[in-house]
Every structure is written in C-alpha cells, then in structure tokens.
Image (cartoon, rainbow, N blue to C red; front, side):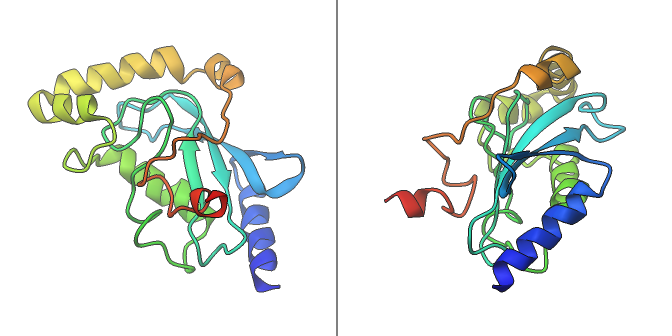
Length: 176
C-alpha cells in the first residue's frame, strides 16, 4: 500500500527533524508538532502545539492541520485553530510533505497574512487598518497563549465544526 508507506516516510522525516513530534496512541496518522514562531515576525518566541491528521488517502488528499493553543492571525480561526491556506487546502499536491508544511507553508502564512481571505475577521480588519496595532496584538497573544506552559496545557480535540477552509473535508466527508 503506497499510501501507508508514504505516511510512514513523511512522519519519520518529521520525527528525525528538529521538531518535537508526539504521536497519538502510536498512530502515524494523528500527531502533534511543536511549532516555533518564525524569527523576525511578531510570532517570534511563541510556541504552538499543532495537531495533524493524515487521511488514509494521504498524500493524494491533504492533511488536516490546526493550532491547539490560541494564535491571532487573519487566516487562522482563533477558537478552533483551523488554518485557511490554499496550499494545504485547494492546491495540495502529493509532491508536498509534512516538512514542507512546517518549514515553509506555515512560516510563510505567519509572515505574509492574507487579510482578503480571513477566518479571523477582527485580525484581518486590524491588520488592514493599523498594522502596528495588529503586530502588538499578535505579540500580546504570544506572551499569553504561546508559552511553554500554554503549550503543555493546550488540549486539541478534532473540532466538530471544521471550517470549510481548514481541510479538504478529510474528516467531514467520512462522517456524512
């Protein structure tokens, strides 16, 4: 089964990287990754627990990814942690892997938010109106919700109300 082998390969690459990865019940298709905010951004110094679920059809179907502890960003739902990012949703390709997501896609999203396609309307509006106030609010959230203590306390259950943008329906389709 090519899909299972690919899941194993991608997760092993992530486990051997500098990221701290915690498998859920030794399942390679469900795990948490500790993600550090990119340097030279208002997210620098923050640590987030990111939940990853790989569908059986991975890599042909995109993973479901969400932040467990709160993050203030126009393209991330502050309460559910769902991410709105084309490359993880509509334009996902089997050429991508987990390392791409954590080394390129999420850092790029945090560096270059897209207020035109928001999941957090308040953050998008603030970014458009006053970027320095937006950055101050991001830093405030980092200090409050993205500390080692906050990460250790963060619980992250698969949300029942997945946004249409958070995944390509890898969870929702199977349930209906």
